[in-house]
Length: 328
Image 1 (tube, rainbow, N blue to C red):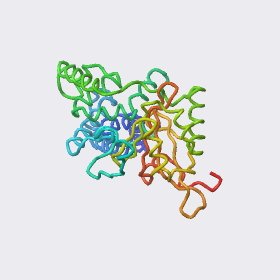
Image 2 (cartoon, rainbow, N blue to C red):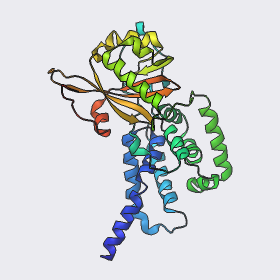
Image 3 (cartoon, helix red, strand yellow):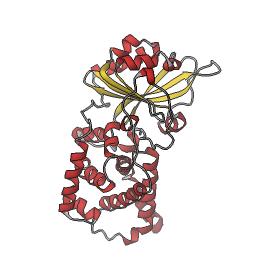
Image 4 (cartoon, rainbow, N blue to C red):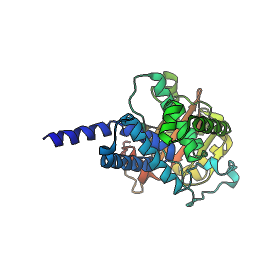
């Protein structure tokens, strides 16, 4: 019984760190699925080597060291993840074509609940949500892996320079230098603040209610009234992305006409409001998955709409229904 109790206690202690470690690995890797694999690998390594853990650091620090090594190994083996806007300029709607780029490893969305542990401090919650925004995670992918780890540990998780140096087996001076270079790189990208998804204030709730009504009614005048003038729209795994009202509406009323008559179900992704889009089913009886739409709210308008079309991956991950009835 003693050994069983000890085993269960260790399992419980390790599991207590799963969500925050998944958030860390997601920021490092840009993939919800790879992050979960990395954390599982971390847990297995920790379990196997726990007898060697001498307690010279906290269990949390030790787990982060293992997770960092796992992520660095994974990053050394593959390409950085990207969004369509990281690869090309915006496409005028007259030239727009849907081209899937299989050689690109796309940045993936993630459910908030998989990567954001419950914390009491609203300020900490705001930082955590901001640091899983698609734009922020995409910018992180431009950093060399060790710089990426340093920036996340120092700026997002608020570790001290000495703690990061110990974790990485380097000097405080090296950590500070890496952080300075990482900050300079991120300064090159547009990371203007977006508004948090949770909790939504009344104006944000109204904005999203109007978005649902406009999208489901396929009312382009009402939809563009909710978008910033420079709003963007992307559709991974296609490399196409559009900017501005005219091009977005031009697309929606041409190739995008297949979205007419869709139903939207609310969820949250990457610290932002999101919707599962269901398209009229081929048999005409109900609705089937079409896209996961992640929105970014900026001020009183929507600044970005990212449509993730690989629903066989995203809908199960987000716990979304496989089908809606004819009544929606």
